[in-house]
Length: 298
Image (cartoon, rainbow, N blue to C red; front, side):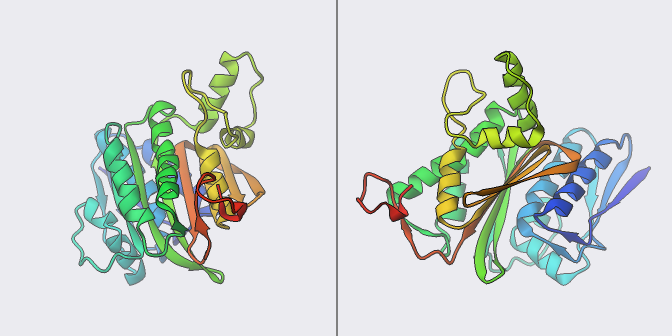
């Protein structure tokens, strides 16, 4: 027996795209004792960084005993995108590798792959020609801040793997570098409210729980301080970039000092973090102890 799932015609990093991915997870999770076929026939556009979410979903079902088969995308643009970031190759679809300067390779990291993850962030993201200019000290801090996403997935979410990939692409009049991190552990919403219960504090709504996670000093860990997300938020704000977090049935989008809360119709049993860096930023970033000019500091 087999069950077929079609990838939506457009999969982008917005409410509709994330709700589709949530629904895909739920529908695939309900399949028992059947082979699963993923059909890209109808997909005309997909943002490369979101293949990290697809990979996490497909991988989980495979590890639960299902056989997952993927067909090669019909549309050349989709096929090219998912070839350049090596997503298709990860699922045994042979393609012609092309120039990947604009793509961040699709990767899966286990809970013990700390050093490999940091090296990946340095090579695939920080060293990209279009990544904003930073001093070496600032680069190290950015890597450590992004590493917190990995560390939080392991310590808070209790997941086995973190999935990542990204791409450089035009948006409006800017060139942006998007990178997505995914885990299928416990959601931020569940973790924050479990912490609230332990501290005899009121349960908070899903969107409020995501905002709580970005406040400096807030943590659900028992032995250490903050989630590390406040530094990343500060850097992306100065850079005029965007951070999205999707967890449970909530979506938080932060752009500068503004944030937008969105309630999702579906539940995502883990966390998706998408960071969008502004490649047209001509500032140089450094730490506060390097120079007295505080315009470009974080």
